[in-house]
Image 1: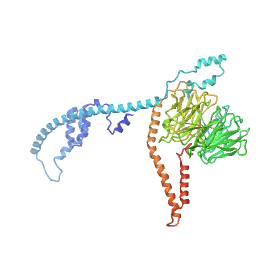
Image 2: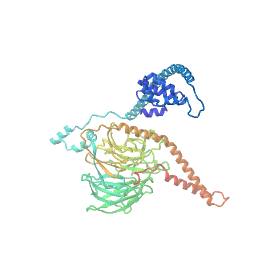
Image 3: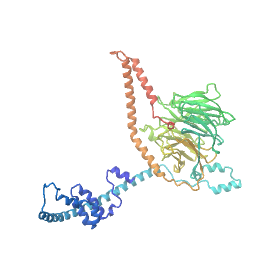
Length: 600
């Protein structure tokens, strides 16, 4: 930080120990300044007189005596010649002048040394002050809206004793939510099969199988405990697979999928561990990033797409998909990135996408003529009408549906109480990660949603304690640099993650000691700095986008005019066509191009 601070001040950094430098070092610094004044020999002599080290002076200027000798005679050209008497006379005068100049230079050196001391004393506290200010600002930012870690509720020895005595039948259930296990997470192994980055992970109800989908357009079903694939099949999609989920209570025989091509497909699996076929059940006009399963329902689920449409899909119907709602803010469509069904009230679902609002709908009360069918909306107050144009990349309900977690791009993660009224503020905020380059996931961890887990653009996995908002675990999760998916096991203290790497990583609490969070402060500092730098350029990027839209519109108008006969004015139809075309283009280009993963 001190280097960064000195560079921004535009000052030359003083070497360490300059305040206690020897006269020899100071004379070296003075020699550099005297050279620019054209008195190299005098500065050398001055350095010699201060240090008393003839060898050092000769080493500093090894050619000075030779230059003095050569200056008395040009060479054998005979242009001029200096006699011995004149040389003696000149030497005596020059020695007197040198003695006087030495006295003056010595005084100037003393003054310069004093100035250098003062400058060093001024600059070093400034650098230290800048560094300490930055550190303090970062610590204040991280400490704000957090509380002290509470005393652990789960005690290992007591829990083991109760289990041994038979008085506790929920040992594993309670242990999964224990902080002591979360702080001991470490990588167990990777599941390697895909040839593209892995965009989706999902455990079946029993937790025995794990489904993964990738940019290679394939879905793999893993026996993750034995580290081997059970089944691999082509999804039928034409572009990146974004979701692949086991439908509940289907005997693990049905997997629902969605992808960048906008298709929603269903794969039927046989008892012989092969895929019978996949069929398309819905089609969005933009990419479809997420599916929302209804608990305990093997036939119905929801899908959301960048076309702002939410489909309800019932596999028992001849035409499975029906449009449920088109998400709008006033009259403008809002493309969707995420959707989730409330586990305690399956009629309600939440969506998020290309604006700052978390929207909750009730399937029984959707009236698009009233509030566009929205039951209630949540948003952090500072993001309402903000220039940052925040998007929601992922949202999830807690285990009992009482809380709703939303991750914003290039912002933080916010926790809302789902029972609060429309427009209520968030209740918790989780900081430190970076969500910028991909459509990044977020999730709860623990049987009672005790922790919040998210990936980051820095390649790390962050786990916060939900109640205190403190980071309790910090792991390097992706060599490619971005962690997108985080899937907790339904019954065990196990976490599956994936990102730009082509494998699936399995984590478990097997470390001998709790994490020390080594390197956490540096990573948070880097994430915060990069986020702040990007936010400074966001306005310029937005203005450039608006300018591009206007120029595109003008080019279309010129194109229509060229097709008309000269001298004929623009007709209403042409003008309407131009505006319509521009609006369509603008609608298609609306919002940032959110990538689920880098192209494989």
